[in-house]
Image 1 (cartoon, rainbow, N blue to C red):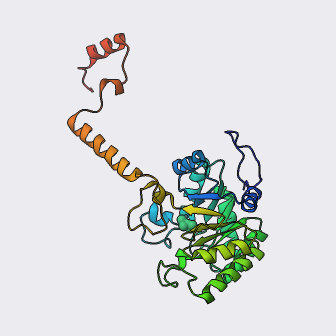
Image 2: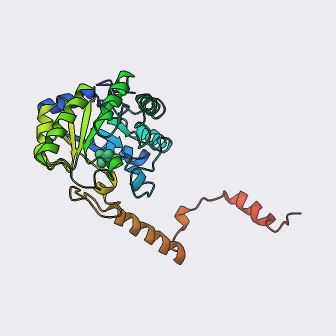
Image 3: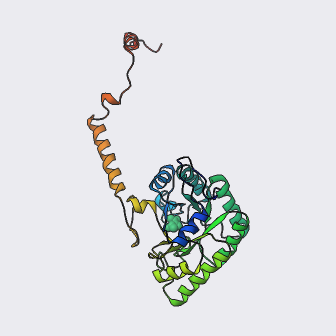
Amino acid sequence: MSTTPDTKHPQGASKVGLRELVRMKSEGEKIVMITAYDYPSGRHADAAGVDVVLIGDSAAMTVLGHDSTVPITLDEIVMLAKATVRGAKRPLVIADLPFGSYQVSDEEATRSAIRMAKDAGVDMVKIEGAGQTVSRVRAIVGAGVAVCAHLGLTPQSATLLGGYRAQARSAEEALQAVRDALELEAAGAAMIVLEAVPPIVAERITQAVSIPTIGIGAGAKCDGQVLVYHDAVGISTGPRPRFVRQYATAGEDITQALAAYTAEVKSGAYPQPEHEYTMPADELGRFEATQHLSAT
Ligand code: KIV
């Protein structure tokens, strides 16, 4: 764990800590979060000046090719988180606890969170929902691991929510979302992700809690925003949710590059002499003189 604020990282910039994020909230400076799943995406996020990196269980879909976030295992996220942490030195790093690793009991949740902090070296874990999740937050924080909550559309329970759809659209559900946020804060949550809720609901929650809120499809009034890496850089497959803004077409660039490579290998245009290693002339002469030796 490295939540200590103002720790210098190797490039000289300060490691982002919880105090820094609370300062940003109080001064109205927006917090930038992006998902990352491996060493290169962690490095990209760090180099871009992102504040918080999330190893999301969206990796189940973006990296592992599943249809939902449900199948990914704790072992798989720990492996991805270890690699991401090596790349993302300055940002605060959060990892999702996957479905099935915290639902059954406070003890199981605490064990999973400790594993994530100890083995993967992340600064915080994220768990979804309210209700029994409140007790999980209390238990994990009590064990010394910081927790980010996640309200609104919680993909691990998408079936129960009626699919991947916006939440808290009735007055009653909106009020419940505000109550849930307050309960999660009181239980010790250090941050809350708000996914696919109307902006007025996100704004009310943001005003009601003293911890930072990070929105995804929750409007501009949250303390920060999060996007999925693959959506932001344009390497996603499948339908794009309405809240996504795509900042690059890296997927097209990669496919074009691989098509050019394929064409050049097929045509013989690659490799060229500048891609080869030479032998000293005397060694070459000796080798050529003996190259007709048989194996026997
Ligand atoms: O897993 C994930 O990518 C997430 C973000 C959408 C917040 O939870």
